[in-house]
Length: 592
Image (tube, rainbow, N blue to C red; front, side):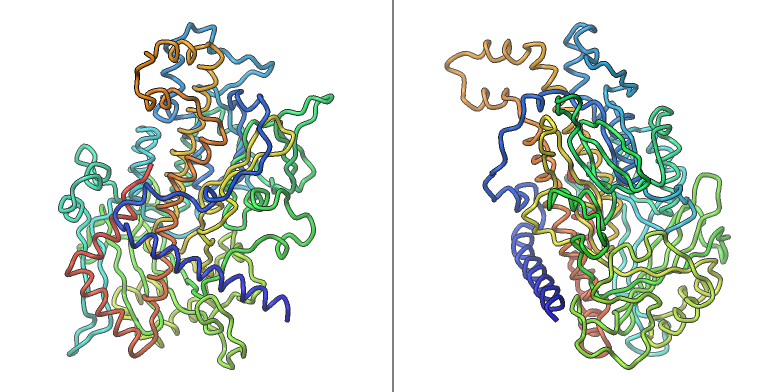
């Protein structure tokens, strides 16, 4: 009883926090760069960091080999753009000054060596559903143009997004609510959106299977980096490195009994149920009954059933070289259909996703009396459910196909495109929708005690898991990678300036009558400050998307009657007045 009360209270506070966030975000819907993470409002009680914090970051542990982790591998070892602050300082110094002073040789081209640890036995490039990439595509292009070309070849260009609903009048199969031509709306909006999302005539909007994207990211890693990707590594403990009384660096312990390190930085890209996030929040990682002890993300009360038709052949004259995404609204549910790139030289994949309310929940709150009606969900969604309920994307064909078809029929979702995909699909799976409360006071980074000023930091879902209803999870993870890597290289550049006395020379050249602002610009930021800058840059856009996507999820699954009717009218009006365009582009335009 007490556990249920605490759980409900936590969810209530989180929902209140989301509502509070809405007032902040909606007060400045087009520009969120000025907003800071809530953790910056708290006074700092941490002890002054060791002078070792001025040492450069050479060895980085990346926990998690998904899209965020692999993108970081590229940003740190395969990106002259991210490394530019460091490279600029190197060019100004003699070669001997830029060599590594540690006894260990660093193989990374830009002075950083990454080790990626993933809990899975291997990366399954055939698992998962389709994703759309827009701002993430632009971030990949900034990271490495060759990598972008490979992702582009594995993808399909996204041309249009459409929303349809059950027919309002007559015998039509559906009613069209809105239609967005991606290139047109970007050009109509202009400004930053056009600068970032149309580059050299290329529209930054693609569809690709999640597995195909991970395959490109993994295969295009530099040889040294790919050789340092290790599997079956579940993180269980983080501690300082103690070498004969010299405490410097971070050691990572894994469930198979192995120990890795020391590292100068540990980055948590280990998903929504992140062990690194628990360390950042609590200073330790649970060792007993981890699944229930770890701070759980919030279950939205919304579930998604996926149907995937592999190696789809174009029919009826449909363009096989581009894609469009189409929503179909029903009563208490909606569907999304689309065609996704499956890799260079491969036939594209069709996907159909059915999003519906969990009958045992009202929003994130579990009903007091469980419904007598048999739940259509194949996966139990109790108050003790955790977000990685299907982390391996376990696939089912026969049972879920019948459940999905039944739900489509009962919810009156137009099945003109949906039905054939479900019937012809090769694999099915189901997931619950979870998210993190964006108004966390804990922040995204934490210093490891007695480590010589070394830090852990979060990226991707570990930092800001969000509902998928704006298609931004992968995009925001890739943008995290670019932004965080840039801050890491800025720190290394600062360390090099300090080492060579470059800062002192610059400061001594300042005239006494110069504006104080010029002096401030020459001050070196600590690693702690740079990690906080990264958090502040990325918190506002991800918090905004989390809020908007959550509200959209509840709106789009409106029940029969007033709620579904209101939703249809809302989307119709939003398309006419340009609100749909603004919401899409605000999320899609990268904030780096």
